[in-house]
Length: 161
Image (cartoon, rainbow, N blue to C red; front, side, top):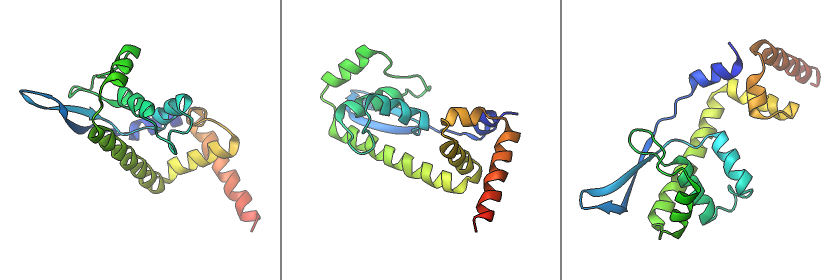
């Protein structure tokens, strides 16, 4: 089994409910669902918004909402450029932006906790960084190559003192 498949089999991304009373109707508050933000999501956001993590703009938050918002069945709520334009023209409730921003922070802190607890993933990212590989390239590496590199770096660090 390849490294990417092994990691994919471990992955569990549960959807969280976000209540948006401002978008509700007579039947009640509107509910949308979003899953944790992945490295892929951040990569996509940072291509369009390079300072996303340090300078979150309204445009980047709208893009995040378009990217992550799902209905209860897991279907994307916003998928087209037209949806993005509609949302940019919408008077977005500040409470929604704050809740999604909070989810982003929670997601990032959860990723940090998960990464600290998952030495396998931490080693994968460390190896990718050291070899100047993308995460996808490192994940595509055969498992035996991955462990051989880890053994090499361990031996080298021991010999450095």
